[in-house]
Amino acid sequence: MMSAVVIVTAVVIGVQWGPTGVATAYAIANYALFLPMLWLSLSGSPVTVASFFRSILGPATASLAMGAVLVLSAPPITRLDLVLSILVSVAVGAIAYGAAWLLIPGGGRRLIEYISYYRELLGARPAGRGDLP
Image (tube, rainbow, N blue to C red; front, side, top):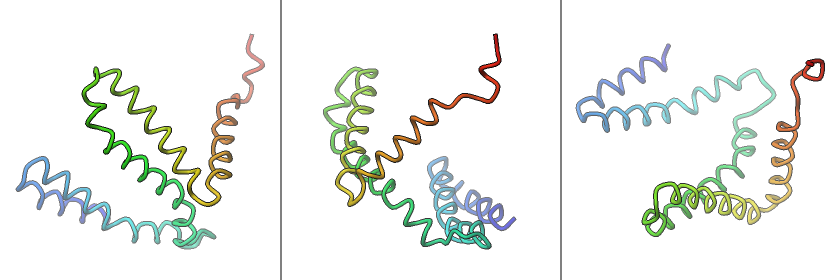
């Protein structure tokens, strides 16, 4: 209920500046609500707020590094054809993300672990699938 009040208030304030103001106010409201909602969500569970942040530190760091590389490489990439630009951006982003993981202490091991989850997910079959003709 409180989050609805905060978001509606933010949108009402932001509407004075048009769509950009609404989007900005909505983003600010969500970031302001993040920690209280996280604390509320985790209260009573074995997961602490600190352990949550420790668990996302690697992915967040790699994502920020990837974003920085993509921003810096945007000028030459945007001169390409649209489809080629997207393909090159995806390739550059994937390489930057993987490289960032490798630079984080223990990141290579965790990256391999995350890749194994992805492979396991792709290889998993729904129950009863083998029974179909």
